Image (cartoon, rainbow, N blue to C red):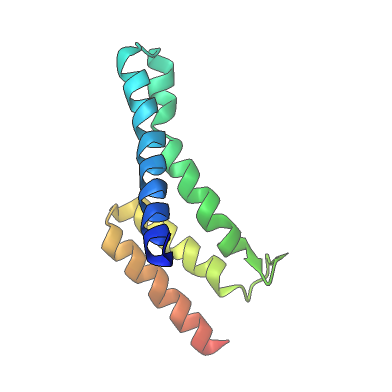
Length: 108
């Protein structure tokens, strides 16, 4: 088998596995009636995942906890969080966070 064919078969196999691992739970849960409290709890999954991705970047520097006044990422995250809470506009939130980050990085 050629290297090119092997590569294509690997990519196609990975795509099939990815597709099936997403399809099976959808098909299984589509037939079940889930409790109302579980549906309400599932609303918080995206927020929890986003927090798990973002908070380590905001609170750490070089793999260490950095709760210092010179942690520009923390200040930018707080500013972006405030804008997101008050205005609920994604583009404005990202712009504010980046502006604060770049401004503080330029100062420090």
